[in-house]
Image (spheres, rainbow, N blue to C red):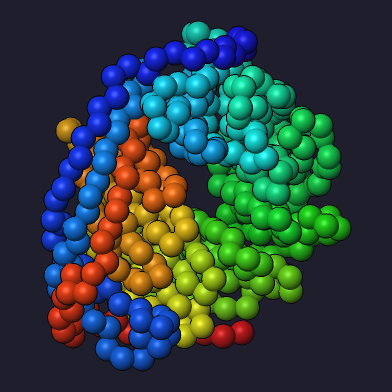
Length: 437
């Protein structure tokens, strides 16, 4: 790995302009929440027939030499990661504060915590081969490496929580284990895992728990006392997220009787709830419905009692559904175009991001749909060429578009008369069934 460089170089021309537009859109079946999701759902879901918003958008474009994958912020700096470099941009002037580059291939995840920038990657040999894996910790202010952790951990199996770096170590002779480091690169603990190592592994963590998932197997690790609990789901886990002390898993099932999501209380160490939709999800093969009533939840995010899940079963069955765990019911938010498997969900503050990518056909298309989950209103849909990542920060929407970082300063005016509510059609109302343990 080469030594990173810390320089204040010009970013090139910053393009700044003000765009004023009226955006009209139709939301398929969103619920204007009012007081709460549960209370609103007791009445018939209302369809937002025409939602007009005046957006004053100051757009700034920062041009890079590489495609931008990860976006984070620290103070007035925007941190971006590409395959072979990490850059810090001054969000006001557009100048590059520092650059850290080297002979490596970085993963797509980027974290900023306690004044440190963290990214995982692999060394490159220049002949198309990868060398040793590593975890890079960079001082966010100076751009210099605070520590470089060289360990056989795949970039996809690294996460950061509570100022601790957590990695799943694969081993050819055993099932592997969980290893933790502090931000100085010192190993803090090593925890055996009963899950086998494979491409199906998923690693999640918050301040209290570490979750190691493989296929149907779940290992819950209490970070305070290192005790573990092993659970087994009825179907393969294709996505998962943590909300407080709840683990929500999206399943990939081939039985119409199987659940779409399961909810595990990590404090109790057991599954407490499962949710099954009725008459909504189907799985297809070659454009034909082969497994009716079977869900494949490719992405799931959650906040408090609200769960948002993406089902992408084929060209005829692709939708984003909001589920209220308290009421055990839900509604369809979006029916995006079938870009399987390139649709994903992200939840930042009060915003739900529905990210779509289509790279199989040229020209490639991509878009970002934004929902305000507090009001359950669709804010905007944006077509973004070569879109990959988005970050909501202090009223600014930061998006990567190929080699460009675009900063959108949105001032959305919420005034009376802007939201025109029409009656929903009966076909937009869905029936759900659920089971309690």
